[in-house]
Image (cartoon, rainbow, N blue to C red; front, side, top):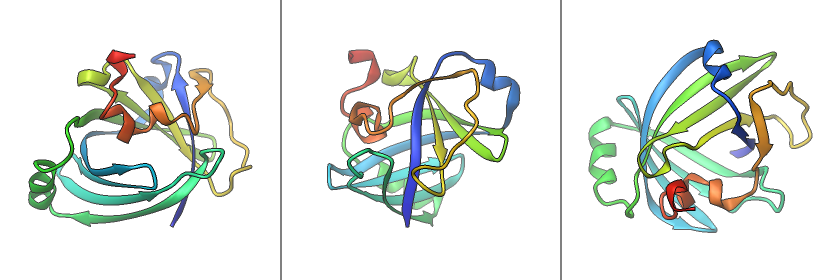
Amino acid sequence: MIEIERKFLVTSNDYKNFVFKSTRIVQGFLNTHKERTVRIRLKDDIGYITVKGLSSKNGRSRFEWEKEISKTDAEALLKICEPGAIDKIRYEVKVKKHIFEIDEFFGENEGLVIAEIELNSENETFETPTWLGKEVTGDIKYYNSQLSKIPYKTW
């Protein structure tokens, strides 16, 4: 239940040439406390509730628990979330033995594109594609829970 991931800005659309899956995601937050966030997400027609704990000091790992819920339940819970829904398309790209999830944001976060990679350990090495830019792991302003409060367009 410990998620280990790193986040990067994306410098070009070149990744789109290698996408093997894309999913529309709409999400909101029932709670955005820094020690725990509770997220409701619709990925196409499947709902999820996710609880995330406080990040490690370097931002690379934190507790994450997720459970699939019905689309109807997700839609109902999204109605009572804190203001500031996240709307994005997630593209999946395989680079060697890893999968990068690239989020292209819309609405108040339009123009922001972030790539994430989940790892088995904090020090695991991985291939860095040419479209991968500055690392933003641990920079709280790039957390979706913060983007819902202080959107990219307001920076």
